[in-house]
Length: 173
Image 1: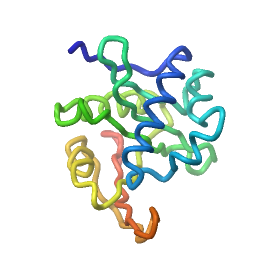
Image 2 (image 1 turned 135 degrees about the horizontal axis):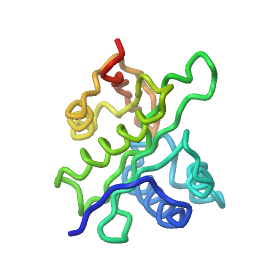
Image 3 (image 1 turned 90 degrees about the vertical axis):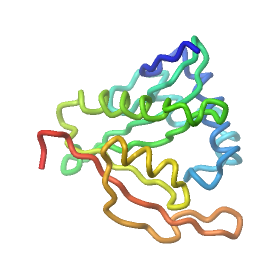
Image 4 (image 1 turned 180 degrees about the vertical axis):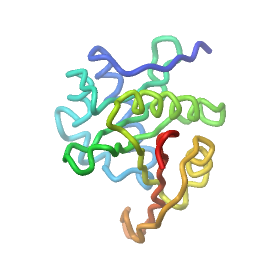
C-alpha cells in the first residue's frame, strides 16, 4: 500500500462522489444524508466545493496510490459570531482499509488543515452513539464529548442518538 493524505483537488470530484455515495449506501445509520436523496442529485454540495477549491469547506482524502479510499470533510461556519468554529463531517474509510489506523491519520490531516485557518478556534463533530469505533478514533485525536442529541437520526423505524464532541485549538481555552 502507498497511502498518502491531501486536500482534494477539482480533478478528484468524481472519485469523491463515488466514495461519499458508498459511505451513505453501506452505513446509512452513521450519516445524516441518505443514499437515496444524494444519489438522485447531479452534484453533491461538497462535490461543488471540491471543484471550486473552496478554502473554508474542503475534503481531505486518503489515497492508496491514486485511488481515493477515505474522506473527511471540514466546513467553517460562515456567520460572524460563530466563524471561529468549524465542523468535521463525512468521515469515512472504505471497509477493506478499516482497522489499519488510516482513519486517525486522515482525521489528523483534516484537523491540521482546518487549524491553518486563523479564525478557527474549535472543531465540532457529531457521531452516532452506537459507533464506538468512531468515538474512540475521535477521542484519540483529542475530541471531548459535550452532549448527546437524543433521536438525532431515524433510519427506517429506528432512532439513533448523536454524541457531540469538540476539539479546541491548543492555544485556546
